[in-house]
Amino acid sequence: MAIAQLLVEVLALGAAYALVALGFVLILNATGAVNFAQGDLVMAGGFGAVLLADRLHVSGLVLLPALLAGMAVLGVVVALAAYMPLRRRPPEAVFISTIAVGIILQNVANRLFGAEPVATPPLFGAGRVRFAGVDASVQSVAIIGVAALLIAALYTLFTHTQFGRRLRATAYDRDMAMAIGIPVDRMIAGTFAVAAALAGAAGLLLSNTFFVTPSSGSDYMIKAYIAVVIGGWGSIRGAVAGALLIAAFEVLYPSLPLLVPALLWMPSSDAVFSQTTSTIVLDVAVLLILVVRPQGLFGEAARQRP
Image (cartoon, rainbow, N blue to C red; front, side, top):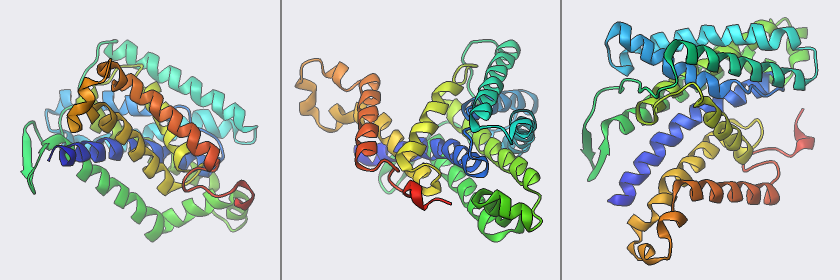
């Protein structure tokens, strides 16, 4: 059952990465600009969860709603500071402004919490659970469940609420949305709020295992960017698929010698199947995908986009 246990870890890690990538795509579709602060919002969510846990002394699942609300407010602040004043400027201006916001968040976190890695509280608790013959950590199973619920809630928001329909209309054609009376600026601020809430949730989910530092957001930003490139620029399902593919490389590739013991006899097997090498292999896979399908696995051809 080793492969089944590894697949649970892939799903848990990929689900958390998917939350980051989804927030990235939502802002990209709504504004046409890249929010380079998305990774640092994950970091902010991690530290926010640590701060709440210190004050409330509850599990991660209990403090999640408060964290989502706080991160949504932070997302609106980012929209007002980094996007709204520059919304009529070229997209490059927003790129720079969101990078600046990310740097500010890093320095604020460093000032408040220091540079030492800290962990967020587990969603339920420590320990392991067995189901269908698979032995998995409680945290991994909880991450899959919480991420699935958040993605389902996001789907419900966008497909079954008036607010969600307005958000989709704004993302599809801002000028037309404005012409029919949709408050576009408020919808974009709402999109930033949703994206920041997703990032904050990912920060809570990821930082229990991988810890959080003021500089950890950069790594999550890169992974979100790669996930979107793999899945297709602006594709929601592509972002999820790309996130799962990244998680598969990170979990399965270094574990190949455990699954295939004969690989242990390879010269320098520790180096060949290291986490660093898995990153290299992932980058090569990204290049191959771009050569074969420049628009990504689920992306549309550029000429088909409105």
